[in-house]
Length: 223
Image (cartoon, rainbow, N blue to C red):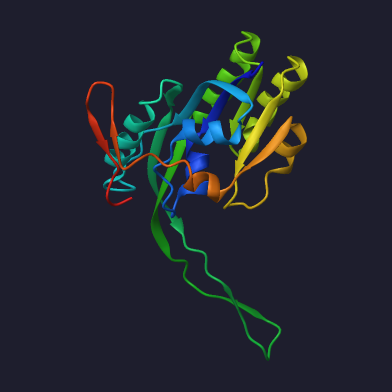
């Protein structure tokens, strides 16, 4: 009998580790995980993300919404949103030390240069994912859980589910950055799988998707 499986996807970790700067962003998660986990009955795919800011990318919010609409055409996909924060602050630019080859002294370049730094941060997704993973385990709604992330903040909730509840938790980790999985995740996971480029290529949505209501969703031209 196929194992009831819920897949928990850290959306930003997936994007920045495997999809950014590639042509694979139009990713059909249901198709992807059906391919990677052929012996599992995938009952839900829980996707954790946040609304991106136009301060980071002018067309980012619109493209993201189109993709979320595409994901929502799969009944298995559930979308949970945290918060995307953009802050600016002043900071000193790092300046290298200057070594004088013929002398023993080190000269520091004065004066320090200040610049305004824009920092973006996604908040809440890892907490939401961890909470749902543990709660779903206690409720016994899955036989196997699969976490898609390389975030070591998820080690403890995975440990709780595997050691306290006795349920297996696999980890699928993105392959581009970094190329190796976090050792702490490898040590705690019940099994590890790589998210390989050939799987991404084979699991793209068609350029045009027709929903059950007749709405047409079109892949963004520039993405």
